[in-house]
Image 1 (tube, helix red, strand yellow):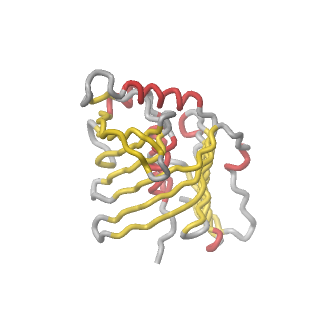
Image 2 (tube, one colour):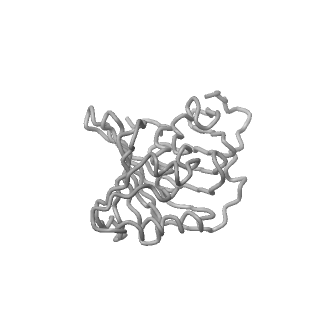
Image 3 (cartoon, rainbow, N blue to C red):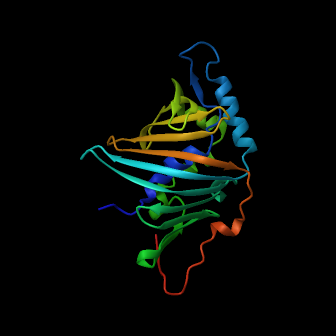
Length: 231
């Protein structure tokens, strides 16, 4: 039986959306082999005003060798710190909506008529570690991560990418992260390896950049029969 969508995926998802800017580079292929990629990522981040995309997620459980798959649509508007706006409407295996706005999150499960609400980064929202990346400056990123080149790869659908690996220099909540960067500097796929060898892989497709997304879309209106659970 498929589990409901866990909040823990949000780190990998936002890693896929938010371009990591100017971390320390491991030059495996000569001086500046990643500089053009990182410059594209920086330009992508600077010019990205909104994003709508289809999202596919695979969560792999290394202990039992099993995986769960999820499909949905993500909407994103960047903002300073924890004020970024994110909404994911999951359609498979269950209809669920996760919305993050103004540093708070709502996870609405209509089948159960239940909504979890709390502050991003605490309680059930603690998995929004991705907001750490949103908050980090270039200097903080370069202090915490090395980037290693994994070569060029073509993803399904014929998307040409550069595959990079982000290795924490110090203590972190995961072993490492990987990102596949397209020719426009957008991370279209990410994979996060947890310390127990579980992994979360997120793929973005049918990207619509700067299409114009109303802010009210990130605030879920709940009916009076929905039970609200603080988290």
